[in-house]
Image 1 (cartoon, rainbow, N blue to C red):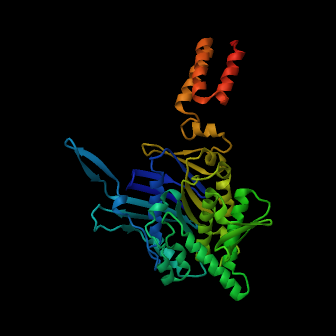
Image 2: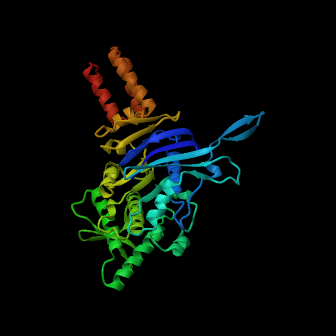
Length: 423
């Protein structure tokens, strides 16, 4: 199962865009402001449409704030807002050699206007499998560190989950940008208590812990899987690597962010498919992650995509990133560049490229500040024209900005010496 295509019209920053996706990992790249986050949010709205027929699971509609608008100046100091409608989001999903196409749309910005949906084939399919416990439910999830503050439901659907109380709870809040850390911890505590009472391991909880351990092993390139469990003494999740026991809260912010992201995926999978414990990590689904590189040390950035693929081999990931390291680390991924004019370009992967080459050839920028780049070019030009005094002067300007120990300054002074300059 994977999202094959999305068509977006008049949604947030986007006026009209069509994007093709593939199975596996899709990387959205482009400058700030080109609409990468808007694309992911539009996909989330489209995927919410799949859940319309599942009782007890609320969906997100196209809100007035989602409608694309422009501000037009009027008079000398006034302005008018113009809303562009209709707002439309259409998706195409491939599932078991069948295609499902649906469209969600809002005709105008009027507060009474509702979101409508064409073709309910995908809704009927989801409704069918959710009513048959023997069928595996696909994971749908959207996570964004940059959008955590925008979560619309403060209780993360706690009351809804109590009322529903079955595997469909895995869909409550699944596309709301953020994650429910307290809910995950409470579920882990519940599983530990149940295991104690029944005097045997709880299969779905063991599967959850195994997924998290697999990811930790992959991202940190460990020889063995660490052990994960909830500590009632500490009141939080802990992990054991060799003989060392460590609360997850003691880890760096970036690593914690990664683990909570994976725990959220594993937690929802355990809720959705508690019977599929032997191969829970091989479940299918669609995961959206905005700014996957946020807060991550470069060593995690090199491994993050590969670790996700190995932990969830059948999952489709649609990721937004600015990191040249993440881009260079991807071997078989679908690289999608979004330009300022909403042009969508599909690029060859940049696996093995240096960070500098990724910046130059995939992101259209430079690894150095423009001021330093110009001085370097000025220095090379002076050398080419045998203007050693001018070259020496330029090196002096570089020293003022960068200091005498900077590699560029040292290299320039060495080039001067090799070209015959004498102090």
